[in-house]
Length: 162
Image 1 (tube, helix red, strand yellow):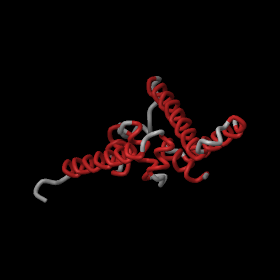
Image 2 (cartoon, rainbow, N blue to C red):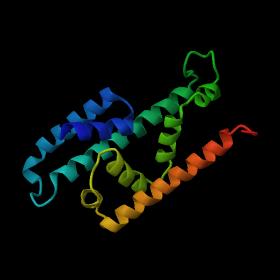
Image 3 (cartoon, helix red, strand yellow):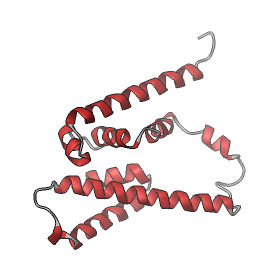
Image 4 (cartoon, rainbow, N blue to C red):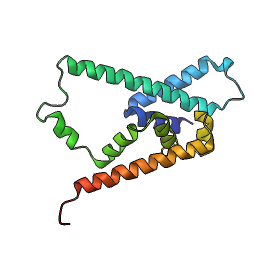
């Protein structure tokens, strides 16, 4: 159970060390409240939900500090290249990650649980509290969105005359 939770946290926070810490925090919290857990509820769903919440809180905290650092005059990187040059150097993989991040929260969550964690629509529906058909709709819309963005990206990058 640790590996899928770790991959999910790592995907959200993009930091393996922080992801490992978050997973440890989740297991510690579950242990602390073990007597109050409802045996009828899925422990797997609870663990994924806790990882998601802690990871998102971690990202909000990190974003807040990054903004404060930039506002206080700290520079990102070595200072040799403007931030725009660094952003322009991102790979297509990074662009896809940003497109995924720009999706509505529930759609993104369903897509990641399906494609990154390999959960079934039924498992995702239990985890998210949605009907399996709604989960399917979220995933279909996510794939359509990414395909559309890829087509636009390719068209913008195409060299005239090729």
